[in-house]
Amino acid sequence: MEIVAAVDTPDRELVGRLLRTFGRFRRQTGRLAGRSFDGSGVSTSQAEFLRLVGRNPGISVKEAAGELGLAPNSVSTFVTALVQANLLERQSDSEDRRVMRLSLPAPVQQRVDETRRRHHDLIATALTELTREERDELVRGLAVVNKVSDILHRQETRANK
Image (cartoon, rainbow, N blue to C red; front, top):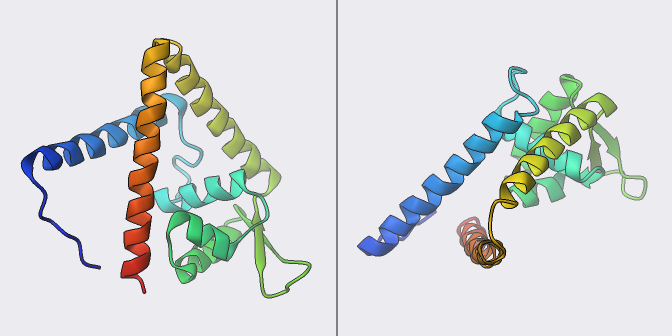
């Protein structure tokens, strides 16, 4: 994949600020609210995958791969390991037996849901300390970040063709 590195200094600083800010935000919320799979031997990528399945019970392997921007064979490797660890369930789709549908066992789903609730509560409480104008500005900023994510996704899609 070819990456264009010709970025002027103000943009280079913006890139650094963006990465630092989101990294700090993720680490801080993880420390305060906890993580679903700390100490369980589940990698960060596997935990992200399990959280995705927890939010989307019945998601297919292909859909999960697309959502996370991973190759389907990488997701298949995750699936095999997580099924063996009793952290994930897979079933053939009732309409197309070639499609595997994924879900979490009840105790794992509860763990994921509880962690998500703690994260949501923590962030919602922090947002109450912002003014209406700051919250509106945050919404506008998130729209821009989503646009950057979409651009990156298109670049990745082109690079993988």
